[in-house]
Image (cartoon, rainbow, N blue to C red; front, side):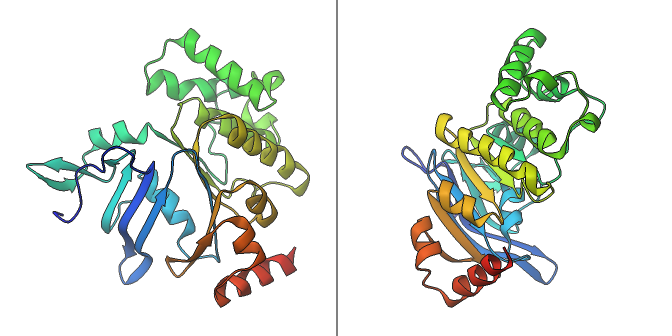
Length: 267
């Protein structure tokens, strides 16, 4: 592990994947990924199924362990920690501390069914951050208002539409005051008529909150509109990346062109 620095120092990217691989037995899902994401940058990750897109987010959320390489957040190793001058695998205490900087919104909401919308947004700040209940409630009320659900604060998830549940999930992630927000196919489980309301919230997040955001999406029009950079993944690697105008308007890789042609034709 000596090849990797213990800290990236001042001016480091908000997120860095340094030679990161993920393998399951003989299957390589991510292959020596090198990716820097700047503070406040909005990066969309696109690509075919099985290309490693969601694995990028799951590794960053520490839901999976890297096989090789190191992930850094704000210049500090996330997956590893320094011990006696070398990097070793991070322990749970280190992971918990760094993971508090990261929020994730999942494809299938993952709300606590026995809690109201307000309770879902209060639970993390109280239990993990140690906020007083009144402070957590004030934060939750403000965020539910931001996502347009202040009138649903006392409803349980079963009483909410899919779009409303996903907006609660976004508010819940924001309640932890993350520095990095991960969005994993947040519209793919939704009916077409409610996709717009969730995209509107993400658009507002992007414009009003100083967040670094990584979004895995099949919504090509939205990715084109909102992203600072688009990364096209193929077989566990970044095949091509660049500004949306270049990726969608003049892709250089035949694989990118083929993928976009197929996806845009399907829509």
